[in-house]
Length: 169
Image (cartoon, rainbow, N blue to C red; front, side, top):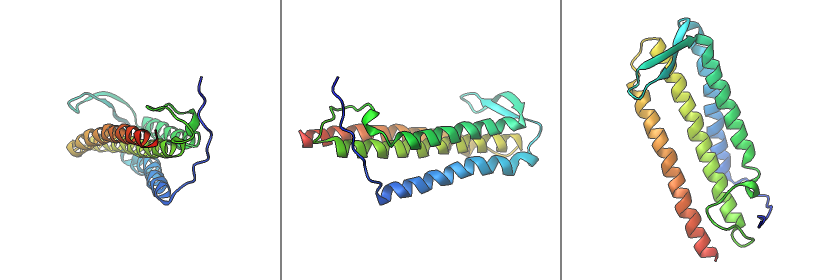
């Protein structure tokens, strides 16, 4: 087994900006359910089918489970990025390409973390607005756009990782 070099990748200004954006989304997934809790009926939608119709209901406090999962996932992904040498890569990692490949993977993880947390926020808004009888079509559209952005981010990563590898070999 070929071990990857262990490098400390310094945090750059762009990474700090991504961290601030992530923090804003994490705060939102905690604050929004607290704000809406007293306005919500006792039973709220918990699951939607592919057409956006509610197909399961539950207790209004269940919305905090969505927030909790989001926060745990966000913190976990934020923490994991500190160990790029343990990640899987689409290219062979060596001393020559490790720094740039690690930086690229960390950036992808940051973007995926933001997009994932924003998906949870959209789901929370979809649940609360559906429960309150408001129009929710925009949230369905935002979910699909967000998911598409996740796939586009991964595609960009794979293309850039391949190009970086060709330049370093």
